[in-house]
Length: 288
Image (cartoon, rainbow, N blue to C red; front, side):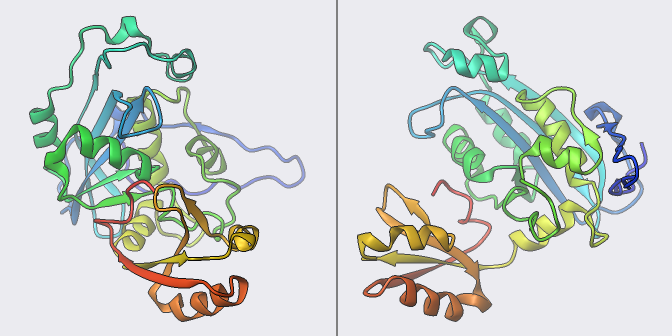
């Protein structure tokens, strides 16, 4: 398989027809290359029996170890694997409907955690399409990967700025002229993510190149502490998110934009006492 980035398709405006190409299977990617790699990544996807990483369980995990060159192209899939895990309790019907995984499929299955930790620790960083979700489940399952930074292809790419409508994995693929025949299976989602990462943005660089660059830039998380209750709608309108654990509204901005954001916050929420926290790719993608 040629690892040249997949360019965005052209659409015939007269007929409004777009041809979608099937994404490569994971075994179709090169297994060896003579081109030097700049970094090695672990591409991860988890299927779980719930949404709370403190109480719910991973029922399937898939990982692909990939080498990436300096300009953000995937050179090769070094290795990949997937595993199932019995959560020891009933899997909700809606999870089975979404993933196709039921209690029969996972009965007696266990993920070999030391081996999986060693497998992922080959990488310099971990990447997931919703790293705020996957990272918490993975860190609980494998504390030994806690030192690795995370990249989020959902948040670390300016999809809206590039003219994309929405940022769900399947929808992004279609906008890039690609389609995945299967979804919500961990290894299928890793396949889909590999194709998306190696596709080309309107800027000419790959999705992965932008995600890597953005992830490594420090940002500042601003907390709107003591914001008056009646300002909640304005805070939400300007992109602030509610953290139910800390009971505070917050947003995250580039460090160059901190002063502008603080001025806006003081204007829309008089009486607020802003607090700041520097975020890196080691700390950014935990759950909010």
